Image (cartoon, rainbow, N blue to C red; front, side, top):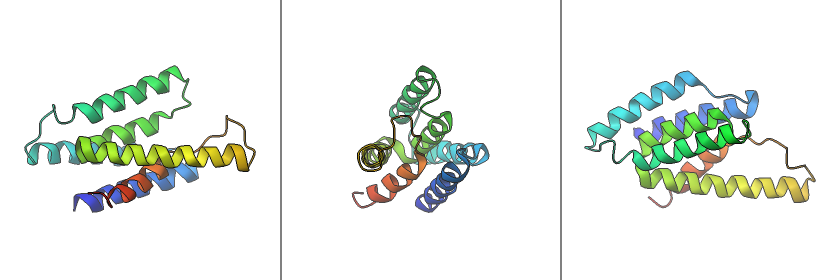
Length: 137
């Protein structure tokens, strides 16, 4: 059930990120609340959530430092995702998503001759990272 909720959450926000360049704060709030409930249901505590939350805070600092080049919506999605998945699955999802996004950015720069200011939506890569990560779990 958790996997279906995560797929729906990422799917909705990936679509919104591509089409509207925004995410649904309502879905982030709802998914975060489910993540907190799931965290405590499985016996985890805030210590277990420290790694994903720390990474989320790091990306938040990057967003501020880059003047918004890293979107704050991506940060909220990362924070919510970290609560639901726990550290190991979250790191798999994030690493695969970042590798895919980096590969796409390389294609945009080298093959399609875009400049480095071309924006790409990150949440679809998180969705692909989550689906790809499911192969390793």
